[in-house]
Image (tube, rainbow, N blue to C red):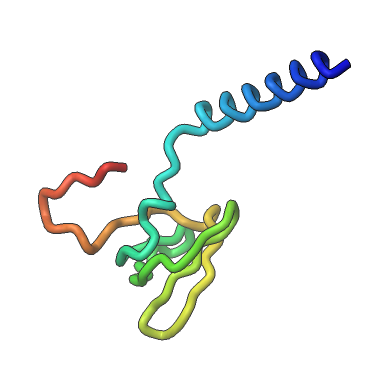
Length: 91
């Protein structure tokens, strides 16, 4: 009985690894604490702020006017401001 449970657990762990591989590298964790320009799908108006936190659906930016919660599905582009021109990030 224990062998079946071990096999099920190993299969579940492998499935989790496969899902992570299919979704590719995660870049948002690497942006935490960096100054960003975020453009939204609607309007494209730039929002400048520092990435304070995130979850699977939202990012939290600290802007000059205070904290701003942005839904990820509303983001068109994210641009890093901190890096000098010509710098290539490890993303």
